[in-house]
Image 1 (tube, helix red, strand yellow):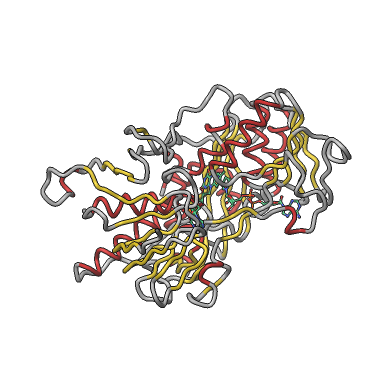
Image 2 (cartoon, helix red, strand yellow):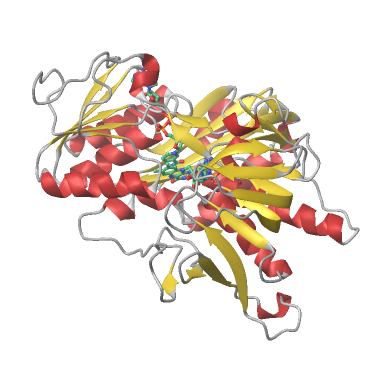
Length: 449
Ligand code: FDA
Ligand code: NAD
């Protein structure tokens, strides 16, 4: 029978933001049955960035992911340099939180969260506070947190013929990653074509090379990652990748995909990373939208009272730049989720929370490389440091300067202290009197602030 189930709090989506929201609820204390996570994935929340990195390494994965059928206490959130959440049991996700004293009586350590997996919500009625699953199950709530994230843009969305051929892979969820792992094993030392020169393109071409594939990247732009990289930054990564044996075919649009039979694209595996699209469809006409996302206030509450939106789907006020933005990165997914739950708990306690005051932070890792970016990539740029792709330990950066102020900072190969220093720069936005002097000083400029 499909009895209706009611929860005080429902988190819709089971990704990064969902996991961090649940963790924040647990810190504040939860009664059994108060919180449910509803996810179409078959696994509990995990750190999604791992899927394009360690999860695909040939030497096996240093991470364990809990599945609905697992019964034992298992390590859940995994090896991408982040905290471990613990989980257990089918449909019951027991969250262990380090801070024991944040629980009501100081002794309670475990928090029960209803984990409703492999369950896709196909209808949301915000007026009656009701969610309906594909199988017809009905869930009602007092407070809803929308954490549906993004889905991939499909080649067929561009009308590309052959876009549904076998052996074309996308990467968003753990099922996608598992299919790719199986293909990597089945097509050992084969040829891989990577379509797209963004995050997925750069991370997956490296991973496929590490798996000993013959790798070609194809992308339409004149240089990789144009939404962040300057031509100078991109030149470093393109040469570094070329030195690793990755072939790069840029300025080319893939207009047709044929495999085996047609061999237009000669590949055993094609991996497509041509962008993401936030999953807001369920709420069309019910919650206000802006810039492609669900519009929220500084506490991630939407235009509908008691309904919050966090992570990739939220268009929120970015206080630092006095404008609204949507951000598709993991740091914001974590922090927005924590902010929403803090705000929910503050309202319950008759208190106020501080506004969200976010400093944009993006990063990526591939091969032996690792970069971080903080702030806003607008205005003029300077580049400094050792950006020779053949160096044994390249370390270089870029600053973005607008109207005499430093707004953005990028650093490849930085130490934790150096990364903290450039983050501080982007936050404080110091005046830059002289670009030539700034170029000469490079990282020293950051350490002075
Ligand atoms: P997320 O996508 O994590 O979760 C959404 C969840 O909602 C999924 O579980 C989905 O199944 C579920 N869902 C959606 N619709 C549903 C429905 N109707 N019913 C039920 N469930 C539904 N960022 C970064 O800063 N550094 C990095 O290195 C990386 N690396 C990276 C690798 C890969 C492979 C990807 C795909 C993405 C990254 N990112 C990243 C981006 C980062 O992972 C992303 O911004 C966050 O995961 C966003 O978190 P959300 O919780 O908003 O969505
Ligand atoms: P992206 O926006 O980074 O890159 C999209 C790329 O697709 C473009 O740069 C372009 O090269 C290519 N493209 C666009 N239109 C095309 C067309 N018609 N034909 C061929 N190529 C075309 O998106 P992505 O790399 O697919 O990543 C998807 C999502 O996952 C994004 O939200 C991204 O932020 C996230 N992600 C982030 C990280 C990270 O932060 N390290 C890592 C992986 C994924």
